[in-house]
Amino acid sequence: MTFNSTTMGRPIFLSGEVGPDMLGKLDNALTELLDPKKLEEGPKKATIVLSSNGGLVNFGEAIIERIQLASKIIPIDIIGATFVGSMGTAIFLSVPPARRYVTSRCQILIHPYSRGMKEISSIALDALQRELEESLDALSVPKAAEERIIRQLIKETGLPSTTIRKMWRKSHRFTAKEAVELGLASSIIR
Image (cartoon, rainbow, N blue to C red; front, side, top):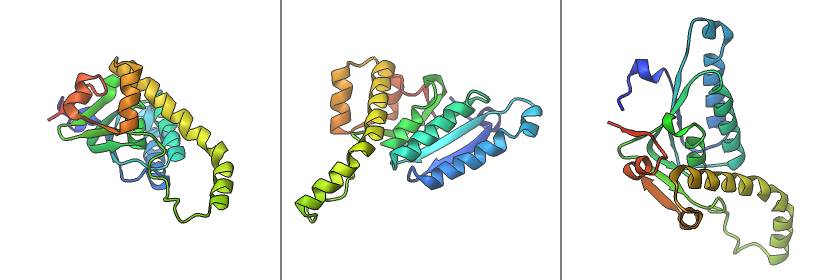
């Protein structure tokens, strides 16, 4: 697949940590694209160029929701560039497979969302217990998001649940070739 200014439409570059800055950048781009006056001018299209090692699950879920809502109005493609990992992978999967592309050097990383928790060795056990008890409710959001992505990976790759879950637990990087072969992306951009 070859992209140019005509086939790409409006580029939206999302890179770095999934968090408030990325969400704001996407909101600004979508606000401009979905302006009713601009929509009257004719069909629009957007291509998100995504390179992210992940970040905050709640912000990732907000980004996914916005992409899915906007794609009901205009076509949105996503190009995974260089590295897409963790919550970035969830964002990459937010559009249908035919609208997902990867660059030739792109790697897609999956892993359990609990990685990256702060080190707990210096926290007193009773303080740790209180902190964990207070955090139990907050775990439901990333657990539900994690399970949703795992189910989507199983469905789209056709790989057995045990294989995907094992890949997820161990943290697996899909090469660009592997992503296309398994149906995670439609083609490699050259």
